[in-house]
Image: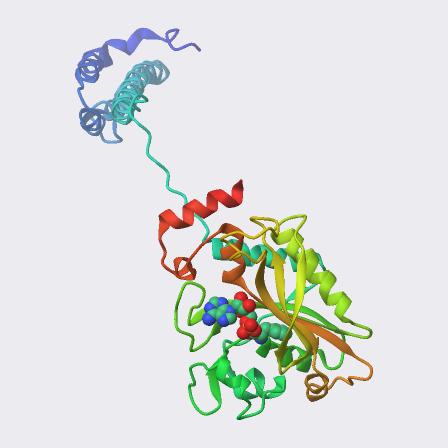
Amino acid sequence: MENNEHNKKYDDLFTPLEKEILALIIKAKVLNDLTEIKNKYLSKKGEFSILMNKIREVDDKKAFGEAFNFARKKLESAFNEKVEEFKRLALNEELQKDSLDITLPGNNFKSGAMNPFYKVKREIEDIFVGMGYTVENGPEVDSDKYVFELLNIPKDHPARDMQDTLYIDDNLLLRSHTSSVQAHVMEKANGKPIKIICPGKTFRRDDDDMTHSHQFAQVEGLVIDKDINLGNLKATLELFAKKMFAKDAKIRFRSSYFPFTEPSVEVDVSCFNCKGKGCSVCKGSGWIEILGAGMVHPNVLKMSGYDPEVYSGYAFGIGIERVAMLRYGIDDIRRFYQSDVKFIKEFNKKVED
Ligand code: FA5
């Protein structure tokens, strides 16, 4: 049966209260008014609901029920409509409060920038990983054995003077070069071929100036296998220089001395700024020194369990800050450590160019 098609015999019983409640619903100003109406009239024991109890007193219970339900539904739908109206109003009010003024200037989003030192460190890693090297780590606090002795630098060797560092006790010290990782890696490899780089912090008792810092970073490279020769080292470093500095970059080897390599070389790269003609960046020479390298000394191989008659190898140690300085024309190594945002952003832009 449709709502209004009911037996109207008992409608009058409900009409007065129904009208009163409808008037209150219409008058309600806030949600709380509706709650009060519900409690007083429409809840289980509300004044309207208990009218149903009168069913016991009437003869035609079916007609009574129909009239009651008809009135109840009318009240319920008026009540629910009012609730919805209040919700809509509340939402509109909320939206008004939250409204965006698109004419206001936007907030400047500040993004971080990577220190050029880390950019160059990653680039160096990428270049060597691209050549099949794996990246190893070694301890920054290490023992005399690994930093010096296994590198053919016994106690009282004069080469120790150039790499004085901070000693924690007679045996433990802050490593003065990443070459200390060589013997660790050889121990682990247990006589098998090696092709690694190890980037990391190094420490020396050097006076800080434009190109020296008491803490700096190097990337060690070590390759050990059968038939490794100086030509392999030169080709590797040439490729590194071309990828890091310029496609037409050249390198040259200058004879040098390290107790752990024989022969030993200092490696210069042709000045990327003047292409070898001579300028202020390369101090007029056309070349810039970037690293030390050489063929692993037979004593070093022997001490770490490799037969120098069967195995040979090369090693190199690149100063990361020096490469970054050359790459970006930075004149003072201390700039890397000062956390100057303006400086960092400037060189970030240059990398992106
Ligand atoms: C060494 O440290 C050798 N271990 C490199 C090596 C490895 C040779 C493997 C042979 C085989 P050297 O002291 O020259 O070498 O340092 C290498 C690089 O570290 C330098 O070319 C320079 O770029 C950087 N370097 C050295 N001392 C400092 C310093 N105080 N501040 C900043 N960079 C430095």
